[in-house]
Amino acid sequence: MPDKGYVQIYTGNGKGKTTASLGLALRAICSGKKVYMGQFIKGMDYSEMKAPSLLDGLIIEQYGRDCFIKNDPTEEDIRIAKEGLEKIKKIINSGEYDLVILDELNVALYYQLVSVVDVLDIITGKPIKTELVITGRYAPEELIAAADLVTEMKEIKHYYQQGVSARKGIEN
Amino acid sequence: MPDKGYVQIYTGNGKGKTTASLGLALRAICSGKKVYMGQFIKGMDYSEMKAPSLLDGLIIEQYGRDCFIKNDPTEEDIRIAKEGLEKIKKIINSGEYDLVILDELNVALYYQLVSVVDVLDIITGKPIKTELVITGRYAPEELIAAADLVTEMKEIKHYYQQGVSARKGIEN
Image 1 (cartoon, chains in turn yellow, orange):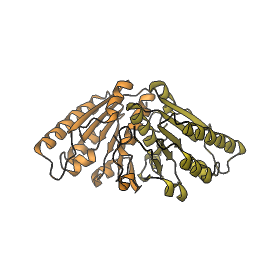
Image 2 (tube, chains in turn cyan, orange; image 1 turned 90 degrees about the vertical axis):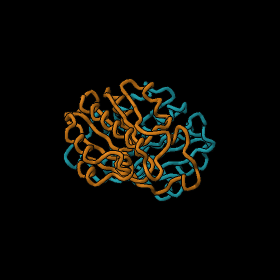
Image 3 (cartoon, chains in turn brown, blue; image 1 turned 120 degrees about the vertical axis):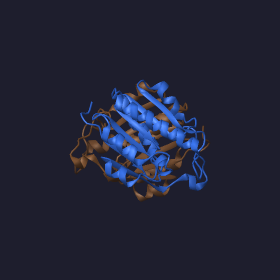
Image 4 (tube, one colour; image 1 turned 90 degrees about the horizontal axis):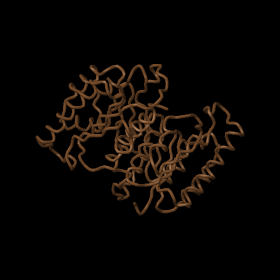
Protein backbone atom coordinates (compact mmCIF):
# COMPACT_ATOMS: atom_id res chain seq x y z
CA MET A 1 0.00 0.00 0.00
CA PRO A 2 1.51 3.35 -0.90
CA ASP A 3 1.86 5.75 2.00
CA LYS A 4 0.67 8.64 -0.06
CA GLY A 5 -1.94 8.74 -2.78
CA TYR A 6 -1.61 11.16 -5.68
CA VAL A 7 -3.97 12.96 -8.03
CA GLN A 8 -3.80 11.85 -11.67
CA ILE A 9 -5.56 13.53 -14.60
CA TYR A 10 -6.14 12.06 -18.06
CA THR A 11 -7.38 14.66 -20.49
CA GLY A 12 -7.17 15.58 -24.19
CA ASN A 13 -9.16 14.75 -27.32
CA GLY A 14 -7.72 11.28 -28.03
CA LYS A 15 -9.00 7.79 -27.23
CA GLY A 16 -7.69 6.23 -24.03
CA LYS A 17 -8.76 8.34 -21.04
CA THR A 18 -11.57 6.27 -19.51
CA THR A 19 -9.78 3.22 -20.87
CA ALA A 20 -6.58 4.07 -18.98
CA SER A 21 -8.57 4.56 -15.79
CA LEU A 22 -10.12 1.11 -16.28
CA GLY A 23 -6.60 -0.28 -16.70
CA LEU A 24 -5.53 1.42 -13.48
CA ALA A 25 -8.56 -0.11 -11.78
CA LEU A 26 -7.63 -3.58 -13.04
CA ARG A 27 -3.99 -3.24 -11.95
CA ALA A 28 -5.03 -1.97 -8.52
CA ILE A 29 -7.51 -4.83 -8.03
CA CYS A 30 -4.76 -7.30 -9.01
CA SER A 31 -2.64 -5.99 -6.15
CA GLY A 32 -5.47 -6.30 -3.63
CA LYS A 33 -6.63 -2.69 -3.56
CA LYS A 34 -10.22 -1.48 -3.41
CA VAL A 35 -11.43 0.70 -6.26
CA TYR A 36 -14.45 2.94 -6.76
CA MET A 37 -15.28 4.43 -10.15
CA GLY A 38 -17.96 7.08 -10.54
CA GLN A 39 -18.89 7.95 -14.12
CA PHE A 40 -20.23 11.46 -14.75
CA ILE A 41 -22.26 12.34 -17.87
CA LYS A 42 -22.63 8.64 -18.67
CA GLY A 43 -25.67 6.53 -17.92
CA MET A 44 -25.35 4.13 -20.81
CA ASP A 45 -24.86 0.39 -20.50
CA TYR A 46 -21.13 0.25 -21.21
CA SER A 47 -19.36 -3.13 -21.27
CA GLU A 48 -17.29 -2.09 -18.26
CA MET A 49 -20.44 -2.05 -16.12
CA LYS A 50 -19.98 -5.83 -16.01
CA ALA A 51 -16.45 -5.54 -14.58
CA PRO A 52 -17.53 -5.39 -10.89
CA SER A 53 -19.17 -8.80 -11.27
CA LEU A 54 -15.80 -10.19 -12.40
CA LEU A 55 -13.45 -8.25 -10.11
CA ASP A 56 -13.79 -8.39 -6.33
CA GLY A 57 -13.22 -4.99 -4.75
CA LEU A 58 -14.39 -2.91 -7.73
CA ILE A 59 -17.51 -0.75 -7.74
CA ILE A 60 -18.71 1.31 -10.72
CA GLU A 61 -21.64 3.73 -10.45
CA GLN A 62 -23.01 6.17 -12.99
CA TYR A 63 -24.09 9.77 -12.46
CA GLY A 64 -25.42 10.64 -15.85
CA ARG A 65 -28.38 10.02 -18.11
CA ASP A 66 -28.75 7.62 -20.98
CA CYS A 67 -27.61 10.14 -23.55
CA PHE A 68 -24.78 12.64 -23.83
CA ILE A 69 -25.41 16.29 -23.08
CA LYS A 70 -26.05 18.25 -26.24
CA ASN A 71 -25.76 22.03 -26.07
CA ASP A 72 -27.37 23.14 -22.83
CA PRO A 73 -27.49 20.76 -19.88
CA THR A 74 -30.86 20.36 -18.19
CA GLU A 75 -31.60 20.83 -14.48
CA GLU A 76 -31.79 17.06 -14.28
CA ASP A 77 -28.21 16.79 -15.62
CA ILE A 78 -27.04 19.23 -12.95
CA ARG A 79 -28.92 17.50 -10.13
CA ILE A 80 -27.57 14.05 -11.02
CA ALA A 81 -23.97 15.30 -11.31
CA LYS A 82 -24.11 17.28 -8.04
CA GLU A 83 -25.53 14.29 -6.16
CA GLY A 84 -22.82 12.14 -7.71
CA LEU A 85 -20.04 14.44 -6.55
CA GLU A 86 -21.53 14.57 -3.03
CA LYS A 87 -21.67 10.78 -2.88
CA ILE A 88 -18.15 10.35 -4.23
CA LYS A 89 -16.86 12.86 -1.68
CA LYS A 90 -18.27 10.66 1.09
CA ILE A 91 -16.76 7.58 -0.52
CA ILE A 92 -13.34 9.25 -0.71
CA ASN A 93 -13.50 10.54 2.85
CA SER A 94 -14.56 7.12 4.19
CA GLY A 95 -11.00 5.98 3.42
CA GLU A 96 -12.36 2.57 2.38
CA TYR A 97 -11.12 2.84 -1.21
CA ASP A 98 -7.45 3.01 -2.23
CA LEU A 99 -8.25 4.32 -5.69
CA VAL A 100 -11.21 6.52 -6.61
CA ILE A 101 -11.83 7.33 -10.28
CA LEU A 102 -13.96 10.36 -11.22
CA ASP A 103 -14.58 9.47 -14.84
CA GLU A 104 -15.54 12.35 -17.18
CA LEU A 105 -15.48 14.79 -14.28
CA ASN A 106 -13.66 17.29 -16.52
CA VAL A 107 -16.61 17.24 -18.91
CA ALA A 108 -19.04 17.76 -16.01
CA LEU A 109 -16.90 20.77 -15.02
CA TYR A 110 -16.86 22.05 -18.59
CA TYR A 111 -20.67 22.03 -18.67
CA GLN A 112 -20.72 23.62 -15.18
CA LEU A 113 -22.73 20.75 -13.73
CA VAL A 114 -20.40 20.87 -10.72
CA SER A 115 -17.91 23.52 -9.62
CA VAL A 116 -14.13 23.35 -9.69
CA VAL A 117 -14.03 24.81 -6.16
CA ASP A 118 -15.92 21.76 -4.87
CA VAL A 119 -13.49 19.44 -6.64
CA LEU A 120 -10.44 21.29 -5.26
CA ASP A 121 -12.01 20.96 -1.79
CA ILE A 122 -12.27 17.21 -2.27
CA ILE A 123 -8.61 17.02 -3.34
CA THR A 124 -7.43 19.08 -0.37
CA GLY A 125 -9.51 17.14 2.14
CA LYS A 126 -8.96 13.59 0.87
CA PRO A 127 -7.36 10.95 3.07
CA ILE A 128 -3.59 10.98 2.44
CA LYS A 129 -3.42 7.41 1.16
CA THR A 130 -6.27 7.72 -1.36
CA GLU A 131 -5.27 7.94 -5.04
CA LEU A 132 -7.63 10.03 -7.19
CA VAL A 133 -7.94 9.71 -10.95
CA ILE A 134 -9.88 12.31 -12.93
CA THR A 135 -10.65 11.85 -16.62
CA GLY A 136 -12.27 13.75 -19.47
CA ARG A 137 -11.53 16.39 -22.09
CA TYR A 138 -11.19 20.02 -21.10
CA ALA A 139 -9.38 19.61 -17.75
CA PRO A 140 -9.47 23.12 -16.23
CA GLU A 141 -6.21 24.91 -15.38
CA GLU A 142 -6.99 24.91 -11.65
CA LEU A 143 -7.21 21.10 -11.61
CA ILE A 144 -4.04 20.69 -13.67
CA ALA A 145 -2.26 22.91 -11.16
CA ALA A 146 -3.55 20.81 -8.25
CA ALA A 147 -2.70 17.44 -9.82
CA ASP A 148 0.51 15.46 -9.38
CA LEU A 149 0.35 13.74 -12.76
CA VAL A 150 -1.30 14.92 -15.97
CA THR A 151 -1.29 13.08 -19.28
CA GLU A 152 -2.82 14.62 -22.37
CA MET A 153 -4.22 11.97 -24.71
CA LYS A 154 -3.71 13.62 -28.04
CA GLU A 155 -5.55 12.39 -31.12
CA ILE A 156 -3.10 11.82 -33.94
CA LYS A 157 -5.48 9.65 -35.97
CA HIS A 158 -8.92 8.21 -35.22
CA TYR A 159 -11.01 5.69 -37.14
CA TYR A 160 -14.14 7.70 -36.32
CA GLN A 161 -12.85 9.97 -39.09
CA GLN A 162 -13.10 7.01 -41.47
CA GLY A 163 -16.77 6.72 -40.50
CA VAL A 164 -16.32 3.85 -38.03
CA SER A 165 -18.93 3.88 -35.22
CA ALA A 166 -18.23 3.16 -31.55
CA ARG A 167 -18.04 -0.60 -31.08
CA LYS A 168 -19.25 -2.78 -28.19
CA GLY A 169 -16.33 -4.12 -26.17
CA ILE A 170 -13.86 -1.68 -27.73
CA GLU A 171 -15.25 1.84 -27.20
CA ASN A 172 -18.24 1.02 -25.00
CA MET B 1 -18.39 -8.92 -32.63
CA PRO B 2 -17.17 -6.21 -34.99
CA ASP B 3 -16.90 -7.26 -38.61
CA LYS B 4 -13.59 -5.55 -38.98
CA GLY B 5 -10.77 -5.19 -36.47
CA TYR B 6 -8.58 -2.11 -36.53
CA VAL B 7 -5.00 -1.27 -35.56
CA GLN B 8 -4.61 1.06 -32.58
CA ILE B 9 -1.35 2.63 -31.40
CA TYR B 10 -0.73 4.24 -28.02
CA THR B 11 2.58 6.09 -27.96
CA GLY B 12 4.20 9.17 -26.38
CA ASN B 13 6.13 9.88 -23.21
CA GLY B 14 3.22 10.12 -20.76
CA LYS B 15 1.72 7.59 -18.35
CA GLY B 16 -1.23 5.59 -19.65
CA LYS B 17 -0.15 3.52 -22.65
CA THR B 18 0.09 0.00 -21.21
CA THR B 19 -2.62 1.04 -18.77
CA ALA B 20 -5.02 1.96 -21.59
CA SER B 21 -4.33 -1.38 -23.27
CA LEU B 22 -5.19 -3.14 -19.99
CA GLY B 23 -8.42 -1.15 -19.89
CA LEU B 24 -9.20 -2.21 -23.45
CA ALA B 25 -8.53 -5.81 -22.42
CA LEU B 26 -10.92 -5.51 -19.47
CA ARG B 27 -13.68 -3.91 -21.57
CA ALA B 28 -13.29 -6.58 -24.26
CA ILE B 29 -13.42 -9.41 -21.72
CA CYS B 30 -16.59 -7.85 -20.24
CA SER B 31 -18.25 -8.15 -23.64
CA GLY B 32 -17.24 -11.79 -24.06
CA LYS B 33 -14.20 -11.34 -26.31
CA LYS B 34 -10.93 -13.24 -26.08
CA VAL B 35 -7.78 -11.22 -25.46
CA TYR B 36 -4.07 -11.98 -25.77
CA MET B 37 -1.45 -9.56 -24.46
CA GLY B 38 2.24 -10.06 -25.23
CA GLN B 39 4.60 -7.77 -23.32
CA PHE B 40 7.92 -6.98 -24.98
CA ILE B 41 10.95 -5.70 -23.02
CA LYS B 42 9.21 -6.59 -19.77
CA GLY B 43 9.84 -9.71 -17.72
CA MET B 44 9.07 -8.27 -14.32
CA ASP B 45 6.31 -9.43 -12.02
CA TYR B 46 3.78 -6.69 -12.69
CA SER B 47 0.46 -6.69 -10.83
CA GLU B 48 -1.38 -7.21 -14.13
CA MET B 49 0.22 -10.67 -14.44
CA LYS B 50 -2.47 -11.72 -11.96
CA ALA B 51 -5.29 -10.48 -14.22
CA PRO B 52 -5.64 -13.71 -16.27
CA SER B 53 -6.43 -15.62 -13.05
CA LEU B 54 -9.34 -13.19 -12.46
CA LEU B 55 -10.59 -12.74 -16.04
CA ASP B 56 -11.66 -15.69 -18.16
CA GLY B 57 -10.50 -15.32 -21.75
CA LEU B 58 -7.41 -13.21 -21.02
CA ILE B 59 -3.83 -14.40 -21.52
CA ILE B 60 -0.73 -12.32 -20.76
CA GLU B 61 2.77 -13.50 -21.69
CA GLN B 62 6.09 -11.70 -21.40
CA TYR B 63 8.90 -11.55 -23.93
CA GLY B 64 11.50 -9.63 -22.01
CA ARG B 65 13.99 -10.06 -19.22
CA ASP B 66 13.71 -9.06 -15.57
CA CYS B 67 15.27 -5.66 -16.16
CA PHE B 68 14.88 -2.89 -18.71
CA ILE B 69 17.33 -2.59 -21.57
CA LYS B 70 20.02 -0.06 -20.80
CA ASN B 71 22.08 1.24 -23.68
CA ASP B 72 22.87 -1.68 -25.96
CA PRO B 73 20.52 -4.65 -26.05
CA THR B 74 22.15 -8.07 -25.69
CA GLU B 75 21.78 -11.01 -28.09
CA GLU B 76 19.50 -12.53 -25.46
CA ASP B 77 17.20 -9.46 -25.61
CA ILE B 78 17.01 -9.83 -29.39
CA ARG B 79 16.37 -13.58 -29.30
CA ILE B 80 13.55 -13.28 -26.73
CA ALA B 81 11.84 -10.43 -28.63
CA LYS B 82 12.10 -12.19 -32.01
CA GLU B 83 10.67 -15.41 -30.56
CA GLY B 84 7.90 -13.37 -28.98
CA LEU B 85 6.94 -11.71 -32.25
CA GLU B 86 6.95 -15.11 -34.03
CA LYS B 87 4.68 -16.57 -31.37
CA ILE B 88 2.32 -13.57 -31.39
CA LYS B 89 2.10 -13.76 -35.19
CA LYS B 90 0.87 -17.35 -34.87
CA ILE B 91 -1.61 -16.30 -32.19
CA ILE B 92 -2.96 -13.50 -34.39
CA ASN B 93 -3.21 -15.73 -37.45
CA SER B 94 -5.00 -18.47 -35.49
CA GLY B 95 -8.00 -16.11 -35.36
CA GLU B 96 -8.77 -17.34 -31.84
CA TYR B 97 -8.35 -13.93 -30.24
CA ASP B 98 -10.55 -10.90 -30.92
CA LEU B 99 -8.02 -8.47 -29.45
CA VAL B 100 -4.24 -8.90 -29.48
CA ILE B 101 -2.09 -6.38 -27.59
CA LEU B 102 1.59 -6.00 -28.46
CA ASP B 103 2.69 -4.10 -25.38
CA GLU B 104 5.91 -2.05 -25.67
CA LEU B 105 6.42 -3.27 -29.22
CA ASN B 106 7.38 0.27 -30.23
CA VAL B 107 10.25 0.16 -27.75
CA ALA B 108 11.36 -3.23 -29.10
CA LEU B 109 11.37 -1.62 -32.57
CA TYR B 110 13.30 1.40 -31.28
CA TYR B 111 16.02 -0.90 -29.95
CA GLN B 112 15.90 -2.87 -33.22
CA LEU B 113 15.10 -6.12 -31.42
CA VAL B 114 12.52 -6.79 -34.14
CA SER B 115 12.03 -5.17 -37.53
CA VAL B 116 9.24 -2.86 -38.60
CA VAL B 117 8.91 -4.83 -41.86
CA ASP B 118 7.96 -7.93 -39.87
CA VAL B 119 5.36 -5.95 -37.92
CA LEU B 120 3.87 -4.44 -41.09
CA ASP B 121 3.66 -7.99 -42.49
CA ILE B 122 1.67 -9.06 -39.44
CA ILE B 123 -0.71 -6.12 -39.85
CA THR B 124 -1.25 -6.83 -43.55
CA GLY B 125 -1.79 -10.55 -43.02
CA LYS B 126 -3.96 -10.48 -39.88
CA PRO B 127 -7.47 -11.97 -39.90
CA ILE B 128 -9.92 -9.19 -40.77
CA LYS B 129 -11.82 -9.37 -37.48
CA THR B 130 -8.76 -9.20 -35.21
CA GLU B 131 -8.14 -5.90 -33.43
CA LEU B 132 -4.46 -5.10 -32.81
CA VAL B 133 -3.19 -2.72 -30.15
CA ILE B 134 0.45 -1.63 -30.13
CA THR B 135 1.93 0.38 -27.27
CA GLY B 136 5.18 2.06 -26.33
CA ARG B 137 7.12 5.26 -26.85
CA TYR B 138 8.79 5.99 -30.15
CA ALA B 139 6.15 4.56 -32.53
CA PRO B 140 7.88 4.59 -35.93
CA GLU B 141 6.36 6.59 -38.80
CA GLU B 142 5.71 3.45 -40.87
CA LEU B 143 3.51 2.01 -38.10
CA ILE B 144 1.65 5.29 -37.58
CA ALA B 145 0.92 5.33 -41.30
CA ALA B 146 -0.40 1.76 -41.17
CA ALA B 147 -2.58 2.28 -38.08
CA ASP B 148 -6.25 3.27 -37.99
CA LEU B 149 -6.08 5.03 -34.63
CA VAL B 150 -3.11 6.68 -32.95
CA THR B 151 -3.16 8.44 -29.58
CA GLU B 152 -0.10 10.22 -28.27
CA MET B 153 0.05 10.12 -24.47
CA LYS B 154 1.80 13.38 -23.75
CA GLU B 155 3.35 14.03 -20.38
CA ILE B 156 2.18 17.38 -19.02
CA LYS B 157 3.21 16.63 -15.44
CA HIS B 158 4.54 13.49 -13.74
CA TYR B 159 5.11 12.74 -10.07
CA TYR B 160 8.32 10.89 -10.99
CA GLN B 161 9.69 14.42 -11.32
CA GLN B 162 8.84 14.98 -7.65
CA GLY B 163 10.99 11.93 -6.83
CA VAL B 164 8.08 9.49 -6.47
CA SER B 165 9.05 5.90 -7.38
CA ALA B 166 6.91 3.45 -9.36
CA ARG B 167 4.30 1.97 -7.02
CA LYS B 168 2.87 -1.54 -6.84
CA GLY B 169 -0.71 -1.66 -8.07
CA ILE B 170 -0.46 1.79 -9.69
CA GLU B 171 2.51 1.72 -12.06
CA ASN B 172 3.45 -1.95 -11.84
